[in-house]
Length: 388
Image 1: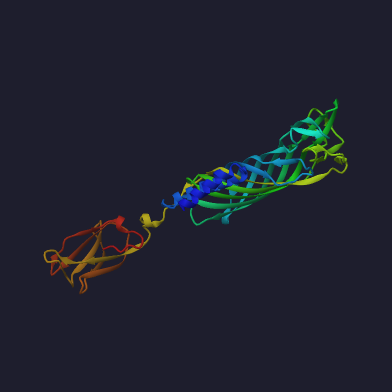
Image 2 (image 1 turned 120 degrees about the vertical axis):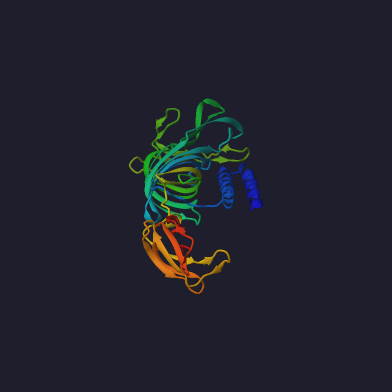
């Protein structure tokens, strides 16, 4: 197990250079594996009943899964922040109200210098972050994983999202005329509110009966997002195209402006162009559960005064330690009243069937000689106990 975790940590360190999404996943998996190994050496006993309401704070990494109509523009992942309020109902079902705030960055692939035929020209790049906010509500289901400290929660939600930003603009001046500016890429981004859906999968480890750490995975989809009708860069404002892009060839120089017409998608204000935007991510969470209370202790650790118990008395001759058959035995309460009587059998034992809780004295008579007096205390009457 230790070798596996060491290899996993090494893989996480190597992957960090290539993919933040994969690296975060492997690092968090290593963390949970370490916690799991520690808990296997500690005794687990759930002495509290967890409350039904909890709040969790989440932070993680979001990876866009949507594509764009551009050759030279991509969207790359960035941070994820979330807040969830959960109510746990009977039979492990529940309800969730969730909020997520996500940042996505445009990534322009056009280099800093392009070519007009054989003449180089620097490019001017501008972009805005795409901000997404999601509010959703839906059911949840919690699976107990055999240990009182580990749970798995599944929560599909539906709700509404607000998207803003994602604009990108790349321009270059013509080498033969500084007054002429060539637009190489134009993307108006998004400015809309749309219906969305999200599903969360969370593995939680309870540090205490109120506080837990979680590792979560999610998939989020925004439906029918229209392109913005304004370019929010350089104060351009309203434009006639949602996006456009000049083509490039790579001879005789890399990124040489193509003579082909640019790709242009006009804005149709009555019928806006729409597309679905999806992303997936991983996060860590800190959850606080309100209202945990101690569980009621069972009768295995306390007296139960409403039941009765079997009392077995053995009469032994103290000097010789021999059992004495035929001895008369009496059980009396603290007032001196006889509660039960009996005679020892051939094994020197007198068996009294049902004696209620209380404080008693036990005495005997052997050949008209009184035995020593023993006592029975109320604390000895425990569930399932035979008093001897």
